[in-house]
Structure formats: structure tokens, C-alpha cells
Image (cartoon, rainbow, N blue to C red):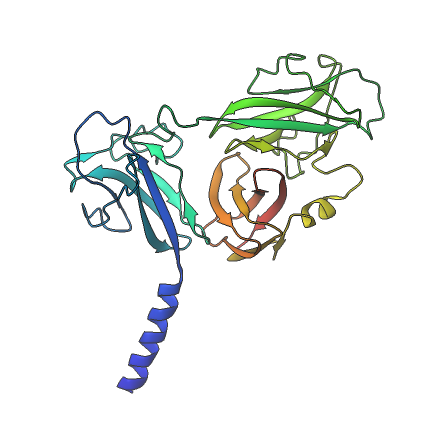
Length: 327
């Protein structure tokens, strides 16, 4: 009996050890004004132990890193410190990467299913240090080939330009009826936008149930999270899809999600490697992970019941699909 019990415990231990994800933390110390020897990352995953997860800077660029295996699907709190708590970050509780606690203000991460390298953030900040890229060029594109009305010049309007009308007109240099414009936006921003034409002479009437929109039945806008230079797909006017293709055909060209609804794990099968974000109905990113070409696990057991948007991008093109989570 003892032999059987020992074997069973060993099997359980192996199974549990396999359910981890490698997470690479990065902190940029270039703007740090104090003195330090070695930064470290401390959190709920290591009982805030001090210097047991020291970071290193092998290339001497003052961006310090450490890679740790963390429990897949777990929600961790953490912060950067140095020299066994000699110094520690004083984070902003209103910042997007923190827990909102004004006393113990920590960073928060939901550990994804695939290995991830977190952005190199400045000490005490959710954003890169000065001198590191803080903006990205986003190219908006709309295909007017199936538009049945009359127009002269389409434009893109959104939260990033105060819905200003015709201050961001699109152009169609090659005459293929795909109009576009590139706008420089802040990395980390969640923007809402829509296409219109001729200074709001006409505007899109979007579907609040479509995967690229905010779900608001009154003000139904498209939503995008700025992470890097991206050329958005040339979507049809008032659609999340390429003209002439259905939602299923558009999504299938880039990735599939099964099962849907999902209780514990959704399998994302991607045609190429890229990055996936899971966004709730409020527009907040609740999970982000790198994905490989082929099958990838998205842990839905840690998500609340509801409807989410799964967005995939490889920096050149992107796609989105709705995912229902039901436990």
C-alpha cells in the first residue's frame, strides 16, 4: 500500500509540475536615480522572499531580466525591488498594470498558457523608460467597394482624435477602393474608433455583437489595443470582415477557437506565431500571451463567465473572434 501511495504521489507531482509557464520579467533601470547592485522580482509566487529571484543584465543595457516558471492560469501580484528589499518600487494605484490598492500597490498578471516575455517597463511605471519606444504606428484601412451610398473621402474618427470629423482623412493612392491612414498612438492605449466620410456626412452603423466592437448598443465603436506597429485588416464598411467573406471565413484564415463556449481550456489553432489578447466586455485586457503556429491553450478556468473577444496579431495582420466562457 505504501509503494502504491508513493507512486501515486509521484505521478501527481509530475502532473502538477508540468502545469507551469515560463514568464520573463523585465525592468528598465536607466531612469532610476538611486543606487543599487541587483534588482529582483518579488511576489505572491515566491512569498515576497527578497533576493531569491535576482535579475541579471548580461548585455549591460540596464534592462534586467529573469525567467520564472509560474503556475499556468494563476493570478499573481508582484513588484520589483533591489538588494533584498533595500529599495522597492512605489507604484501608482491608478496605473493600468497595478491592483488599485493604495496601501500595497503591486503589479498584477494572469499567467498565460504559453511562454511570455513581459515588456521592459521603467522602475515604478507601467510604461517604457524615456528613450524607449512609447508609441506605435497603426494603419487603419477600410474597403469601400461594397458601400452602396455616395461619398467623397472616408475618414477615421475615435477617442484618439476627439471624434474630430475630417481631421484624419483616408487616401486611396492605387484606386483599389481600400482607403487607409497611419496614425501614431501611445502604446498601451485602448482606443475606440469608427469610419465615417465627408466630415460625418455618413458613418458606420456597426454591430454591437461583432468581435471588433465594444458591445455598446448605442455607441457601437470598433476597439483596438495599441501594442506595436500594426497594419489593421482592410475591413468592409460597418463590418469586422474582409469584403466578400463571412465572419467564419475571416477568422478561419488566421485562427480557430474550440470549444466555444469553453469551461476550462480553449484551444487556439493559429496559422502563424503571434500574440493573443483576451478582452472583456469593458475593453480591459484580462490575459495576453504569445502563441505559436499550431495549437495553443488559453486557460478559461480563471475567467469569469461571460463573452470575451480574442484578438490575434502578428504585427502585420490581425483577426478577432468572440469566445463564450461558461463554467
